[in-house]
Image (cartoon, rainbow, N blue to C red):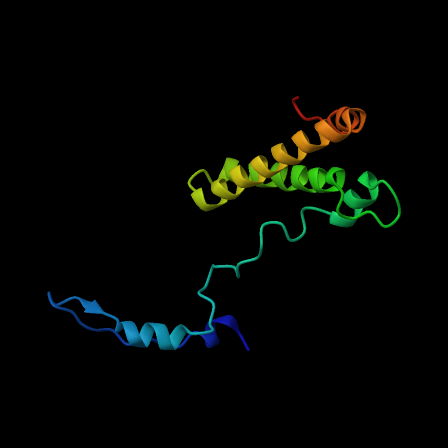
Length: 133
């Protein structure tokens, strides 16, 4: 089935000032489930850009380590880098900007914790990830 045949034909109706307008109900019901031409289906920003498994393997302390501070910081750094690139092209995406600020704050807290508990590990991780600290 073609994409154009999935979108039903809408009949215009007269508006207040003589112009032809579509009924809202017809528009909503007619296009429910159909995708408008030229528009892509929403996909999460992070879906294919961050390879979590490789990041975990590179930063884990032992074989079963998936959630230590070092791993969390490395994952957040990759997500922050990707979201920063997204915001360079979509400057008015304020919802993503808020998410970026929350991620950087979370990474900052994890870095502060790591610095208190393991200074050598902190310095090695900052050097490895190329963070400004």
